[in-house]
Image (cartoon, rainbow, N blue to C red; front, side, top):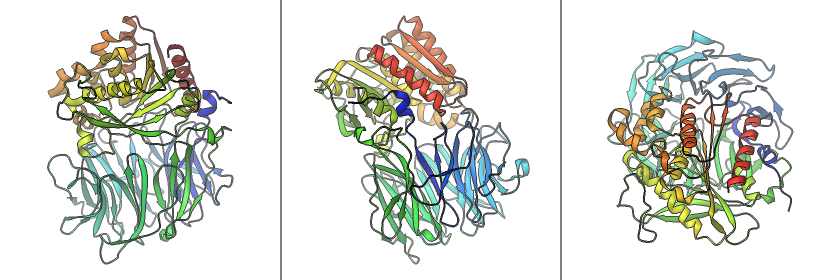
Length: 619
């Protein structure tokens, strides 16, 4: 069987982030052919695309004007997440920096329907909060009009159909948001969603008549449901829901045509339809599109809602863009992101499994943190991938832990996973308690004092792996990024006997120093999840891996970006120093032109080549 090195796998490309042009004939998307995502366009499916940007930094999004052959896109520098907004004229190639304030973050809020203005949120006035701005498409820099001074994390959700109002979301945590409308003439900032406790109000879209909103919320359910909010009465009506989360809705406001997605244990199910013009909660459905892959998202409607573009991916399908005819469901793949010459049939499909945690054999894994007795026997879902050929009891395993923590591992394409599986490793991707996608209760089971319960779930997963016929229980390694990096460090220090090695990528080593040094705009959101410095410092210190380093036994590899605004590089530096004092093998790799993760191809190649060599040596 032919094998390929890690560089080959990392040269597998992704095409995603589609936006349909104002004439409906041209599609823009992001693709990383040059090593970082840039803007490309197509006028016909599966043709050679045209590249429009040529930067060494990543493009984070691109959105067509509704009226002109121009796009607005975002780009930061060195991974610092202080994105600036730029306007690209596609006919001439001219690019203009619209914001030109490199010390501030700018978060896209959408075009006005006439294409003359755009909105965004920015912390240019106060680094810790976001204000709302509206700017003419030809203006630059300080010309933007400050239309509302915020007092927290604000996100603009788009102009109303008549362009007189903006939809604004205010986040208190990832599990708690409020919605507001902002009248651009009077300045009235109207609160739409008063509530008690944590309630999610997400993916809001204006109804075609501007008299209501569609959104997903868990106000009345453990899972996210699609609801309609009447802006006159402020009453909610359920539109669709059930056992699984509705991830979000995309709506074409001229026609009322929509696509909403349901997350069924990580797999996407799309519903396509059209709302009744006289009854906002009644709709007609169209045939389900026959999408390749297992995960879909990023819907962009064309003019009049006749078709929509979306990104599709799967275990055996790298990210690509398809276009779906709304009424028929007929699906055409438009992009051909290359697989670096690696046959797609060699990519392995994962198996969805469920691991029982707490009480699998009458005991709970021991750990320093406080654990809850009330969820004995909780099932932890995960995706397990075996190599094509293996010897029973001889297969090493990489346990790859997602970040977030309110995130979810789904059966989407991973070149890193396919590389390790091609090298003879098994790959396990758990969705421990605290993961999203399984309801509000499951997502809250790791909050603050229950933090270490999720680490115990990792131990239960390793117990499950150790009993698998294919697995060598002495050759299991853990790897994770961001919060997943904390999970790696916590797993290594709480359950040192389970691991052959660990790889911490931009992870949290010390919750106290992390919260003290993270970006000012993020601190309150993170304290809502992890606990506050004022009230929970002692507990945060007790669960920080840096303070439990004396039990570390496995070799450790620590990787980070110098410009990381979320988890500052000091987290990597301090854990590596303490680990070395323990006498275990430690390697570090810091990139001076990266932030929270590695976006540049040459850095990804260096990082994962080093990770592969490290795991080959120690596992």
